[in-house]
Image (tube, rainbow, N blue to C red; front, top):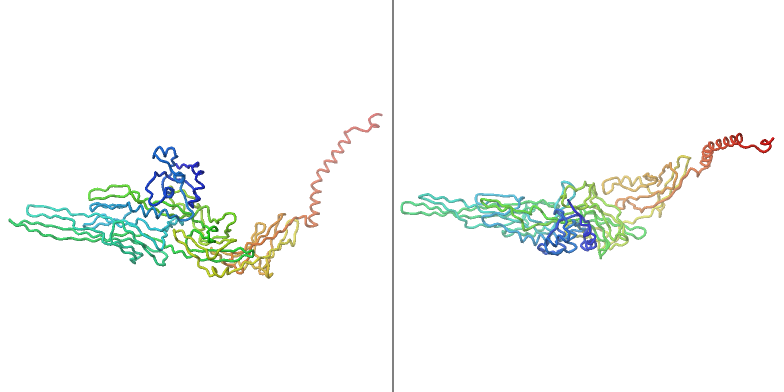
Length: 581
C-alpha cells in the first residue's frame, strides 16, 4: 500500500519550486548512493519507478545511521515531476555507465532483453543499447510511446561474448588440443537506417557521438564485429616419430541491436497580431510535443503546454545474467540508465506570472485518448485520465512581448529554437479590430420576445457576416469562425450583420460575440457584449393580463370574506333594541 508523507510534503513545498518541480505523489526510500555527478537532492529525484514505501526520519536514522536532506525526505514519500526536462537523467547515466563491467573470455554478461548470437567458437554474444541522450520518452497514448532523441547526442552500448573452446581428445597414437590465440571486438558502428554514421574501435562499452541530419524518424542500429582466433594442434605418433600439425581457425560474427527513434528537430512557427488596446496576440505551432515558450528576455513571462516530466530508470538493467559454458547466474547490475519521460498533465497549459502574465486563448492539436495505461503503476503522476489536446499550437494574449527574445523550448533537453516568423522584426502582420454589438427587443407578447442582434465593424460600420466565418476551417479541422451567444443559444449573423433570437423567459440577457481565432479569420475582431431586458409587463396587454390574473386569484378570498360576514351577522350579537324588549 502506498503511504504519503504529508508532514514532509508541507516542510518541503517551497524547496521544490526552486528545483523547477511540479506535481507531488508517492516514491521509495533510497539510502545515500554514489553521486554520479549529482547533488544529493538531485539524486533523490530520479527514482519515479520505484515502489512507494515511505520511511520516516526516525526509522531511517536507525536503519542507516544518517539523516536526509528535506528534498531526500520528500522524494522518499513522493514521486516528483518537472516543468521542463531535467539534465539529471543524462548526468547520472553518463557516470553510472562506468560501473558496467563485461565478463572474461569464458564468461558473457548480458541483460535479459539482449539479442544473443552464437557461432562455432563464439557464444552468448550481443551488442545492446544502454542509453541514448539527450532523449525523452513521450507518452502520447496507448500504443504510442516514441523515444524522441536530439539531433546531436551520444549512444552508449554494451558488447560482450564468451569464447567456446572445443574439447580436445587423446588416443594412443594421436591427440588434438585447442587453445585461444586471440579474441577482440574489432569494430563498433552506429547506423541510421542503412547508413553508417559513426565507426569506432572495438570496446565492451562503446560511447558513440552522433549527428542525425534533418529527418523525421529513423532506426538506430548498434553493430559490433567480434573476431576470435584459435589454434588447433594435432599430434600423431608413427612408430618412434611424432608429427605435429598446427592449424588456425578464425570466426567473425556481427551482433546488433536496433532502436526506433523520433529525431526531435524543433521547428516552431509564430504568428502574432495587435489588439486595439495595445496588447499582443502570439500563437506558436510545432508539429510535435513541446514544452513552452518565453515572451521576454528575462524569461519571467512564459507559457507552458500540457506536458510535464518525470525521470525513471530502465528497469531492464536491474539484473544481468552471467553465463559460462556450464552455468548461468543472475547478478545485480551496478549500472542503471535513466530516462526522461514526458506525459500530458491534468494541470494543463499554464502561463506565468499567474496573476499578471499572459492569458491563454486557445490550444490546438489532434485529440488523443489518455496514455495512462503506458505509465507503470509504480509511477504516480497527475497524467490526464480522459481525452486531451496535446497543445501542438498555443495562443496567448500578452501585455509584454520582446519579439527578439521569443524562444521555444522542446520536450527533449537542450532543444530550444527561435520560431520561424516573418513578423519577428517587422511587427504584427494582423491588426485586430473592435466590433460593435447591439441587441434590442423588437416584438413581444405575454409569452415570448424577439430580440434583434446586430454586429458591425466599429470603425467602418460594415456588417460582420458570421455565416461566412462558419465556412472557415479551424486549426483542429472543425468548423471555425465566430458566433454570438444569448439565452443559452448560439447564433451567427447573416450578410447584413443581423441575427434574430426568440426568448420565452423574463430576465436580463447578455449577448456576447465570440470572434473566430485571428489565425484563420480575416478580418479579425475582438470580443464585444450587449445587454437586453425583457419582461411581459413591458406591454399594455401584459399589465391587463396581470390585473385579470390577480383578480381571478383574489376571487376565493372575496367569497370567503363575504360568507364569513353573513355568518357573523346571523349568529353574532344584536344591537340593544333587539336584545332587550
